[in-house]
Length: 554
Image 1 (cartoon, rainbow, N blue to C red):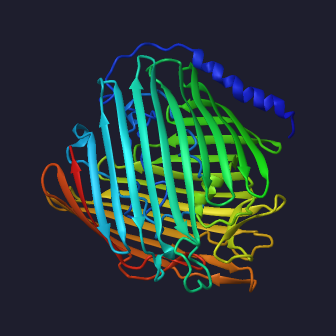
Image 2 (spheres, helix red, strand yellow; image 1 turned 45 degrees about the vertical axis):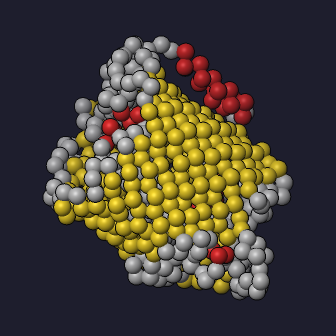
Image 3 (cartoon, rainbow, N blue to C red; image 1 turned 120 degrees about the vertical axis):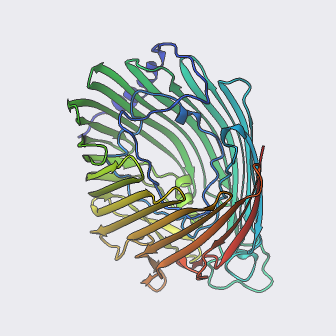
């Protein structure tokens, strides 16, 4: 279905006029208010599998502590995201989470650590509240390995980041803003041969990312109109030719027409430029109007469209149904189509060893049927089971480059080839006792109708994560974890042969000891089996590694 692109562009940007609506005044403290994103209790599950080196939650997100009378993530429980490659299992560390025993009373924390492979770690958060409704802060992070899985410095890597932020709760809105600079560095250490006397930085690659962003949340309760909106500008460049700048804005809004009937409008607008061999402007607009209707007290129907404008205009249907039998059984189902904007920045998150001549395309979700159930026994068990089946065009696969096997090209399935994707997920969170908590996530994905591709290269078909927390003593915690990735294939373009990569079994354990109320010491042992797995062909990962840290909160 085709219309003139001017209609969609004009419709997308006309939404900013919504901001002129007024809201009722509601007083409160930025620390104390409760943020409710659903009319029914939301069960949190891990959206992606990650190892024990989780990213530091650097900025306290006060938007999570603020009431809003509609669900911003209306599509999240009903539809699975576009299939993506999870790379943070076994991958380079991105820092460890800072945890304060003093809770919200400790606004400042600093952590230092060291380990084998020349691992050094420093990250910290320093914040203050000028008033009870304002928060300011600074976040810093240094995380590096001077050595890697190969016997030289060619596999070193580092990440450095500094971020300043501000949050203010007004009578009508919650405002958030931040400036973030991040520099990451790695090496093309997957080369067949490294000549003698080669300089250590000869194959180095680094990326500098600068981001400015701001968000606004409606700060009223019980009002017919509520919204969340934000904008971000990002500039990415490095020592290689590719570079990118991107300006993105979003809006999520809801208007209550009557009791049990509401009109919702979500929108995205992305203006970007990607420069590799040539300079290309890549713009993307999405408009998602829908009607939500409570057919019965326990049955909710939402229907609408997803209108996408990039190289062409595409309009997809969207239907979601939710039924709440009781707290332990909540059923959901959905049918929709969508499009995923693939940027250079998001591609580097998947694979940092990209070649300099890559092209970028958006992945089209032609249609997807999904369903499942979720619930809780109100005491110690939370679960979510879901499945989906759909067809996709221009799906991205990463394969080694024929020109240089240490670099990766992005291959896209043809626009006229519908890659079928069957995905099944199971998530369980259990409190076995007041001392033992367990979190199990299983993700199975099957790719079919790949056209000229024999396998879904570097996309696993099964991922399992089992994370546990054991409070051995009041001051001692033990956190054992097991991660599994199976069904990985690589492709060597020079031999024109596919390679079966070994299944990854990542066994980790971490111990934490609260020395005092403010000091915490920890010791992490990772990849205990000591295998140099390849998540990507020709790129072995670190074997057994450990890190000792000391954290201070004040």
